[in-house]
Image (cartoon, rainbow, N blue to C red; front, side):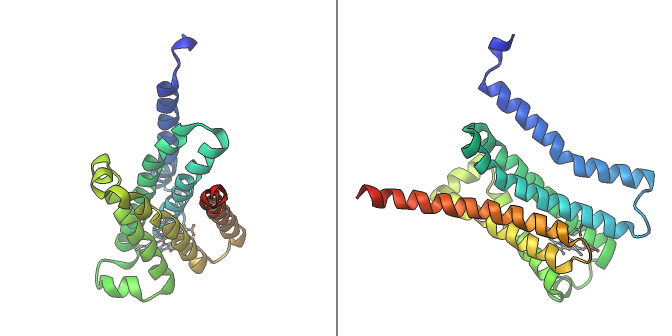
Length: 205
Ligand code: HEM
């Protein structure tokens, strides 16, 4: 039976496992709502949990390429799109929760532009929109050579999401620092690889 276990099966198993893991924040939130365990400010807890899930999944998406390089298994990058779409899904729920439960739907322009931390969040969100819209195979073909540079917007989005988190943070500084260190490490490793790969042709000359 083990002989039948091939690369396709491994990819399927990893994808299903990551799909389940990505749903855990939603499951836990729904469970807390059902059990009435949200404390004195449910709107804040719901909005915060969804925002944190969006940021965590954004970082998980950025982690797939380094994982491929470290392990040599290309399957990790084939899980990237799913994780990125989950990040977008949580970001949409986060914004909807904020509008529905905290500030309301009136004067959206003022809502999104008055406070600096909201502007950061809105920028992070807007940067995710074109990525989600061009994530299908069809759009990948249609955008052609533009697809890769366009999808680099994910770095900027993650950076603005972190700024947004940092800006409105009230207490847990350690948590913000941990997210920041992870993000900087993920960006630095890419910058290093980019530097190395752009130096290779120079060495050959
Ligand atoms: C228009 C876009 C956005 C708006 C209006 C918005 C709004 C908010 C608000 C109001 C809070 C504070 C909730 C509270 O403490 O009462 C918050 C927290 C947060 N948001 Fe956003 N957000 C936006 C986009 C994003 C995006 C795109 C991400 C991540 C990808 C994100 C991640 C977070 C995180 C991590 C927190 C902190 C959660 C915590 O303190 O535990 N937000 N956001």
